[in-house]
Length: 88
Image 1: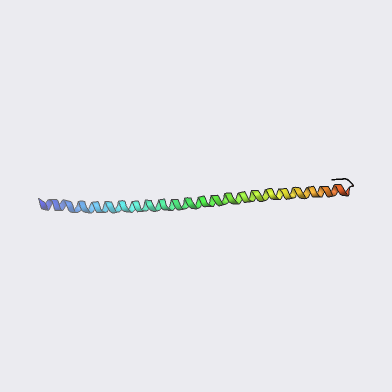
Image 2: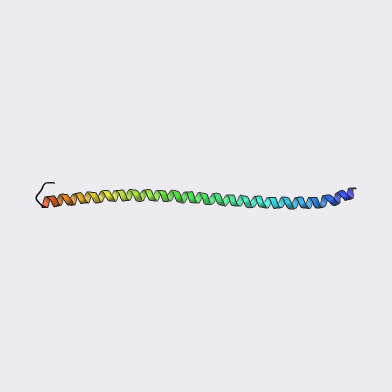
């Protein structure tokens, strides 16, 4: 009887080790995928934040340029009124 038990226990142990190793490998691959996904997500969020900041700066520069253009236009019109003999 002990010999039969040893004959059965050997293959069962081999199967258990193989299944355990396969499970561990799968868990390691999944952990690696999650780590890569998190890294990619962090990079995308950082890139989005930078793009939003750049857009805000561009909008601010555009608004400032518009004000400058309006001021120049007012100055030009005042000069033209003065040249035509009027009072601005």
